[in-house]
Length: 243
Image: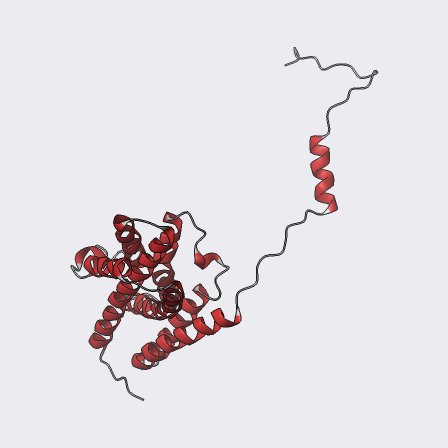
């Protein structure tokens, strides 16, 4: 099977996916701002952080010049447009929730593929490509949640999130190594949407940690450490003058 796209065309397509992710995450950031009751500036700030955060972290780690979000004049206006769409649109809570789920699933695929491809194009190996593909996909949302003093969704309690980004990044890298990056792009985006939506519907999530219960030995050590010093009658007090 031959590739449908040349390497230059692959970079172009993944660049458009990156920009589409900026628009969608700007919109999703605006939806979160609406839920928090923020004003217009809050919409723009949260939308911009949500739309550009992951890509800026990725480009900073790659150290291949200034992050593209600061050099390409399309990125910042695209994030603003997404936030303004959320500010101006009149939709019910149920409609927003349904749209949020679909767009959030799609942007995971867009950004995981864009981040992995940019890492491969920089000459790095498959493992850094998986890492930066995942960071690109989840970084903006994590920074947005921290800005709003919320536990980032990527840390758990939100179905399969970073897991989807890892799988999509790995799938795209495998297809790129086999010479069929077009298949990786199509299957990665479709797979991200399908897996994320099914995980949300069925409540799939990674297991949490076991509760920490100190053993009896640890309790004894702690109790000894808190035990006050008692001096017997036959014991001489310590001489502080001794050198």
